[in-house]
Image 1 (tube, helix red, strand yellow):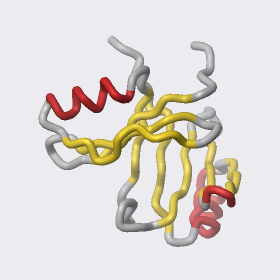
Image 2 (spheres, rainbow, N blue to C red):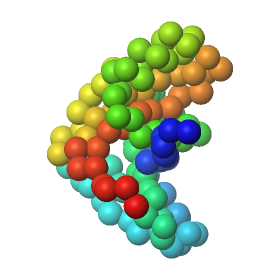
Image 3 (cartoon, rainbow, N blue to C red):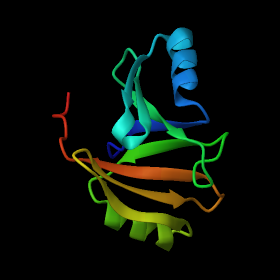
Length: 123
C-alpha cells in the first residue's frame, strides 16, 4: 500500500476571518492569516491542517478541496486522464511552499495533489 496521505484541506469562505473564528471556537484550531496570499491557514491539534480560501467560481461555497501527497504530480495527472478523470489545473508552484495540481474524478469529485518544497521526514 502506498503512502498517499491527505496533507491539506481547503474550506471556501466568504469571510475568512469569520470562518476562522468559527472553527477556532468550535474545534480549538490554531489560525494563521497569510494576507499576502489572501489566505488563512488552520491547524488541528494533531498537526493536520488546511486553509480558508475566498469563495470564487473556482472555489464555490460548499466545496471542500482535499490535497493528497504526491511524489510526481505530472505523472499522477497523466494517470488521472488515463483512468477517465479530468485535469482541471496543471502543476503550478505555490511560492516558497510547494506545487499543486487539481483534478476531477470520473464521478465529478474535485481533489488536488501536493508536493512540498520542504518535505518532512517520515515519522
